[in-house]
Length: 110
Image (cartoon, rainbow, N blue to C red):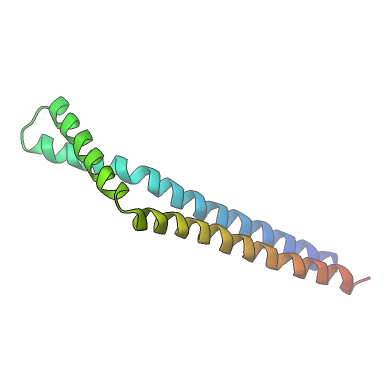
């Protein structure tokens, strides 16, 4: 009886860790994507023979322009935020499913 409840709690914790990791990974990708685009643009300009300082300035300008174009698409921004909210809501729902099982194993032995 106690073992069943402990196993369910361990599984609940593993589920919590998994969904926390996926949510943090999603946010991390959104934060690192512009930095990676900047790095690749600077490498491209540097490979064309421009000095590093000028390549970095042009890269920052190019990423800024891309950011401006993305910000002009409110549907895309709303989609990205909505996907993140759905990810968090799905993880929360899966964790709450374990609560009923914990309650069920707690009453079964009493």
